[in-house]
Image (tube, rainbow, N blue to C red; front, side, top):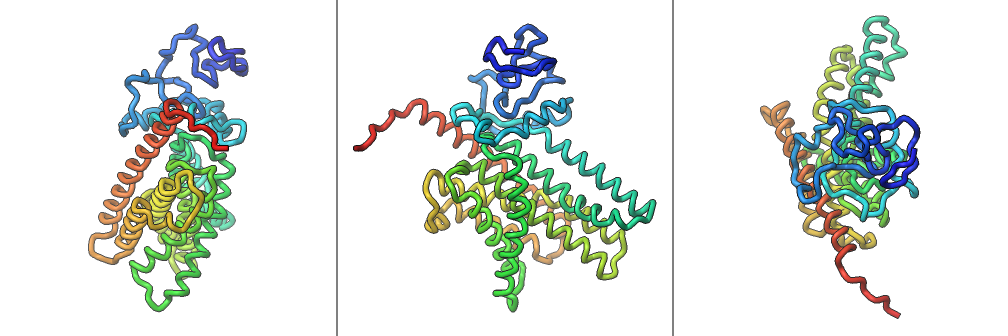
Length: 364
């Protein structure tokens, strides 16, 4: 079925064009049923009139499609972005706020899998389910949070397989780098050194992945940083959960460890690494990597802010758990959304320069 507007060849039976969003059933009416609106992350981000578009944060709009019905085809379509063929030109990228929804489905799937593992252990007393319970419990919330960052990556230039690669390799690499630094400061371990060591380890790993020119946008840095942070957080949670069981703790202690670390995971390693990744990409821009980028004011400010949050998180003061942690988690996400807004404005400015700035003559 060829779309009459963009001539895109769609599979039979679809109600909306997968390329431009044209409603076939309503004869081209662009006001479809809001409960079945096809969310095309690759090209159809926001249906608002151009004069009304804004990159100002409107949370009721950002999460407006979470509770709507979505087809399997929509989910499949999301996973094809990021390849050499499916990455859009920057001129085609929408600078308006994306409306993610798949992250919520990922959480529900992980929750069902965790409940199945829990039943296998507690009801049937089959300990073959225990490794799966720990792994799923450790990865469920970090991966869910990562999916949110992936859907918010408006340039759509990072394939999902690459994201998983960064989670696994970046997660373990950042932990190994942290262990090296911990050995250097083993006689002076405190909340400040813990915050410095772990954030330095993660930012080194993030820089390794975004140092080339392919990932030049702030939203790219947020995504890659979130992937490294998700791997770090999940592996660390799995380790703590297993340790709580092996050191004489009960299964209730194991579940409590997984539960609390999962609840707080979005505002910890995932958000912190995302912030430093976005700040580094902002500092780097279109330049080649140079160590002087690490002392640029914007990156340095965000990095020190993250280290301070991490150190405060680990400080054993009264009321820090859970109220202080909740406050820090909310604060982290306030900064995350501010950085997402800045990243969308970065895309808008890039498109404006391409469209309106005169082309410089080529030097002989």
